[in-house]
Length: 412
Image (cartoon, rainbow, N blue to C red):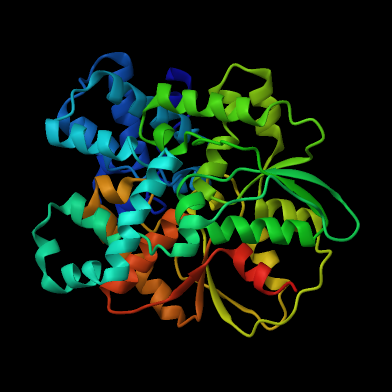
């Protein structure tokens, strides 16, 4: 870690790229400031006090600083390692620790999320959710619980019953075989994204296999410092996918998951993990490289594309989703001002730091609203929920879709 810390030359290029520094202009809430704190912890001149931990907690982990850094500082490894140290050695206050345990006893487990989806569906169907929101009673909740309620995704009966086929043959001449990572939140609350992913891949000539009984990829756990838990999830997923014989690529359609899947070679000491990581491709990355096979029909829509941080910054994937959208005749692609800034979702950041998330997200919501687009295209479920919640808070609504869903709508 000492060598990684020394890569930072304190040039300051990261400052305007950091959402928390832009919000508060506090050096310790900038990437280079946090690296200074890491150095103090590393050389023993600084103790892990609550105020020091707060500066690490307030980092979104958006990796905008990595895009801006001319020295190639691996801030992703630094913040993940530091957060692992925090979680291993720093005693969280009871309410904070309890809330974190609640989140991580739920979100990485698709079966538990599906069980939660039923009461959400019934509350919406019976009007209970709408009544509670109109009553103002929810404003009495603590900030974290209030944010959890606001971000609750819409649930339909169809989504509750959605399943994925184990194998989908290619339509037309077969160009290859891919395996799909189903995700957790994506699988339960956005099943239409997985269904669209399979249909588009099949239409473009790829057989799609979905390994059964997939668990979490470990992304959420890794990003908040639950290192051992993240490794356990990652190992279980690698084991479930097996040797990948005959599989040309492992496809992922959630930005946060994708960035972690590509780290498996660093995360696990397992030759299969290295082979797995080498085959991971975001669906837009894969399809843009493969080129279209199925014809695209016109969709006369104005679409604002949101750069999810773990796609644009962590994976360096920016042009590929735009290229896919531009394959659709009649679609007008609109850029969002300051588009590479985080929306404030950042995994579970908006639940752990709701006030900071809302302040950072307000900038994004304003810029999205200014596009006057028909649809927001977002390649990460957390970003979609965050931006729609922020727009609703402004009294505005905006249809949101994954880019692959728009592509699916353009393919017969």
